[in-house]
Amino acid sequence: MAEVLNPERPEKLSIVVFSGDFDKVHYALVMASAAAAIDTPVTLFFTMEGARALMRPGVDNVAAWSTQPTSSGLETGADMNDTFVERGVADFETLLSACRELGVRFMVCEMGLKALDLKRGELRPDITIEIGGVVTFLNDAHKDGAIIFI
Image 1: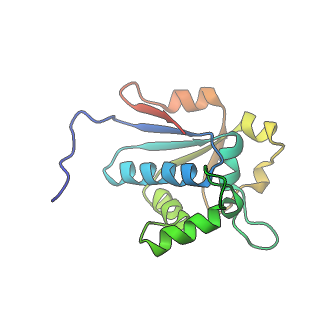
Image 2: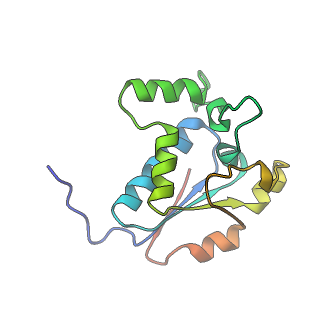
């Protein structure tokens, strides 16, 4: 049965990705890709530990998100991602690619980068990432939109 789109849904979705927990960042990507798939503009604003998910792989070519903890603290992002794949749930890279292909806007908080002593060059080069502050994020939001904090 097909979902009927709600004409009263938000005109834009703005998601603050504050948490560095893999499962929370993963779900932010789920929400962003789903909203973009139904033609709702989306901005993902990564800050603080959430910004680590967008770091480029290390010299060992291990994705930064794979080493992030989960909210339970019992496994790593790589472990949970493998479980998702086994169960037919979209993995992190698939969701990230879907967001990119569907036109989701990726922003990383300038203050968050400074607070964690991260540099622009440490972010993934395969995603168009804008560096901006909270004012930039809020100016990007829509008065008839929704802001979600994860």
